[in-house]
Amino acid sequence: MPDFATTPQASAPQMLPHTHWPNFIDGYWQGGGSSVPVYNPGTGQQIATQACASATHVDRAVGAAQRCHQEGSFRHLAPVERGRLVQRMGQYLLEHLDEIANVLCLDVGKPLWEARLEVETAARYFEYYGNQAETMEGRSIPLGGQYFDFTVHEPYGVTAHIIPWNYPLEMTARSVSAALATGNTCVVKTPELDPLAVTYIARAAECVGLPAGALNILCGYGSEAGAALSAHPDIDQLVFTGSVQTGIAIATAAAQNVVPCVLELGGKSAAVVFDDADLEALVSDVRWGIYFNAGQVCSAMSRLIVHESIYDDVVSRVAEMSKSLEVGPGMAFPAHGPNMGAMISEAQRDKAEAMCQRAQQQGARLVAGGARLDRDGYFLAPTVIADVTAEMEIAQQEVFGPVVAVLKFRTEDEAIALANGTDYGLVGGVYSANINRAMRISRDIRAGQVFVNEWYAGGVETPFGGFGKSGYGREKGREALLNYVQTKNVGIAIKG
Ligand code: NAI
Ligand code: MG
Image 1 (tube, rainbow, N blue to C red):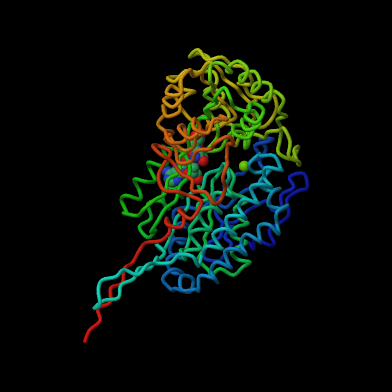
Image 2 (cartoon, rainbow, N blue to C red):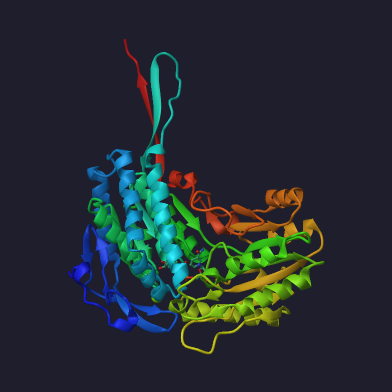
């Protein structure tokens, strides 16, 4: 098997440190067998190959994780020691920030500055959960003088992580850091569209000295490696972020094995904008909310629900902002600025473009973008679609691209009904200077997170997850630790 550290250098223009990227199973780098072609969405060109795991590789990784768990060397570590290992993995990512950001930028197509932010946030997860490893305390339950009784939080064992392609590094860091901090072992299936950067999390594990088998990272296709992992009889817990359809398949597989799963399945999240909102701040938030990562964000601000008295003003301000964005390959944008990268694949771009066309056929009004750029790579122009009504596809279905749908409301009740009028419920927002109004909307929006006067207010520390078809379970915050532990009660009778 090729040693990862000595894999041949890629040719200079690609600026990738390796042409072929291996999987990491049971502490070994494995690069042989079939491979997945890896593309730069900013150019449409193939830039590398990634070893492709089959069901057999998945089985080997699960076996290694199970052996590591049963041996007990990792789960019996003092939590402070385990926490330090997890924290050091984050430090490893920061020490290699430039290199990893470069890889992310080329593989995912996002601006280099956005890629750098992703590496920093990934590192932050390892810091946050590493810090919390020793905070998982049980309780003592009084049963009278003849007993002592206490609870302990035990790790589930082998946790499976199926990773989406929109933030491959950050999403892996998010669940793996919490799973490791609580003493679980992990098998990660990376996204076939952009697996490369996650390799650095395996390198971090190797560098800090996690025991072999504690963290296995492999790439393969969803239909084979993903399906084999989610249905494996020896996994004890499962985390998935991605589409509703795949989420249902995964939850079904988990149900067959009676293991718990956490599902994070995207949304159609709305910002409700009142006539007393600060519109300049709002427009800046729309820029972050729908054009960051080219709108491929589960909690994107994909709907704007605007009071009729300011509707025309908001539509024209947002359209002007979106037309001012520069769009191009990620490497063109090293510094934070008004720019946007490519979508992940031709198929995702074509799907988004077709949704823009159908929105117009259904009577909506295109005020910016709506079509691909005439250049190589998978680009969709930053898009604003106005005069959207509740029943239209563009108001109901996730585009997962740089497309904001603008709707109009007159009364507060109408705004709430519109905001809650989809199958989803991931996040929501309200823009108003009136605290009571903002609180009423926050109370009545059916979503796992509500943002008042700032989209994405919160961070690694704040629990995140869906109502409705946006999924169940919570990631981030202390809540997420509870995904990875089960409670054991020990009752002790005092005899004599
Ligand atoms: P997907 O949900 O099929 O893929 C996500 C992950 O699941 C990938 O790692 C994939 O290999 C794996 N996977 C696919 N089929 C599987 C199966 N049968 N068993 C186990 N694992 C499987 O998403 P896809 O098709 O790439 O994108 C379609 C739509 O999904 C997007 O347009 C977007 O609306 C949504 N999506 C939402 C994300 C979010 O962050 N909430 C992330 C990615 C996609
Ligand atoms: Mg790629």
